[in-house]
Length: 243
Image 1: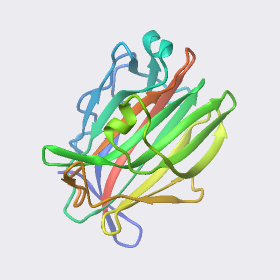
Image 2: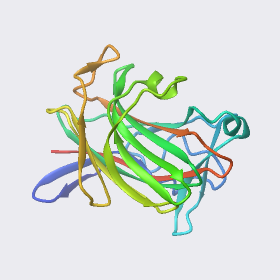
Image 3: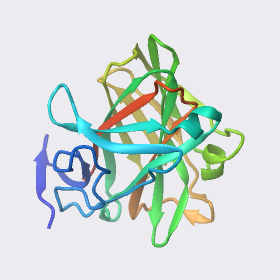
Image 4: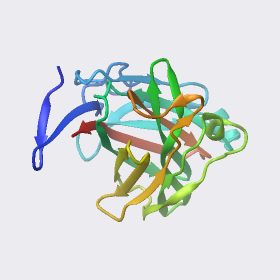
């Protein structure tokens, strides 16, 4: 059974995704069943001729995941290629959901993160997500994304839009994104390191699947428009339910 933590004024929380890479082997792909367990989350890595995802040491301490493009992707960079997918443990019906993650971008390129409901064997479209874009060598722009489809992200033509800028930071700086999903209002809100919150809303049904109640949550990560010096780092992929 997962450990229950009391947070704030009687707020009961339970971890449903906790991916820190701390117990993964350096230089290897991330583990399929991340430690600690519970929660019973599952990770799929898509290292291929397009992207490579390996666990590396963090100079600040601990470990993190590094995502880099392979030469064929650098040669044809106008796409978004899948890197990893993490699926959470099951939520209690009706629970509120929130989470956070840390990312860092080096070189020019983009990192995309999408959140989607996984209900039984089926998945909704993405309820929203985040992007980190290094359009210049000196600045990373962090944005909240409106809902989008899998084909809209991975197809030949990008079909997704920004709900608003969360932050502009120096390139190479690590940043923490905090987010929450409210099922009653079907909304996703996010902020960066305690900054102003930006929100978007999603449909009750998409891709032929009811988005709520959310049974499990899928967190997808893609790399986009890379150059030969692009490297994205992610860590602390965490999701909890609370009541």
